[in-house]
Image 1 (tube, rainbow, N blue to C red):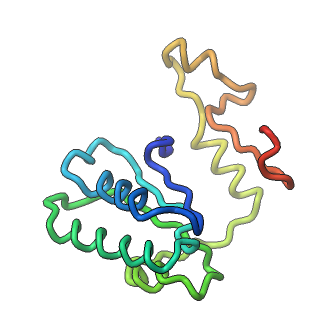
Image 2: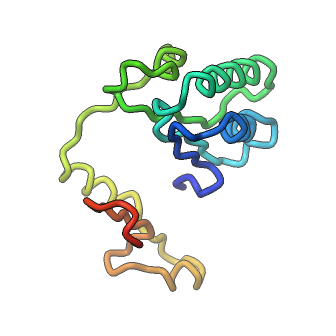
Image 3: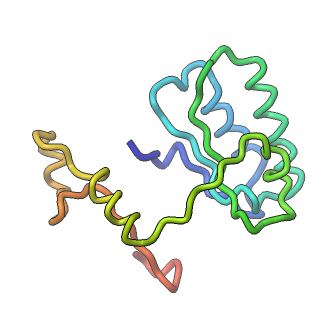
Length: 145
């Protein structure tokens, strides 16, 4: 399943240490084995102090945690060369291949479909193409989509 609202933190220069620490704790705490995927989006935008705290909390919790596998993703802009987060987590870096728009659409159509025989609630939100996820792209952000 895709991450839900409580599993994603969209970062900006105004993102605070507490927000980042809370997400890291959720991802690396013993109760986080419930198949959730925790994500920091745009982590390259964090200010230096918050980036240092992210690194500190992450490595402290990884060392003290008994969780052998966790689901914690940090998304950064590859062009952000002055980001401390990119430097601190360089050993974990994974570069994604460059797929065409057609390849991405084909993949999403096969992966994001409403399963047959689902509960009535899921059927109420069924889309014409049997997809249960919708992406909205806009040239003008924040216009009430």
